Length: 90
Image (cartoon, rainbow, N blue to C red):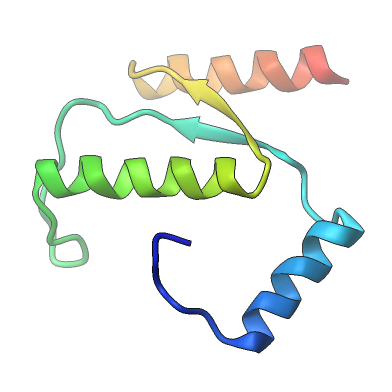
């Protein structure tokens, strides 16, 4: 995982989660909107947010997840895209 050591406890739990298929392997991956607004809770540059996004996607994929892209658009359109995907999957 990105070259950082993890504890045996965490490694064991991650393996258990994978073996028992506790979580869905398909994840909605909301692409960045082309900007990142700094707030009191979020102090990250846009460039760093792109690195953060890349790490998350690589990590999901390394655990065998399929990233379902949610394209940059207004909130209503993104919600509709997710709803359509869920409806088609039922």
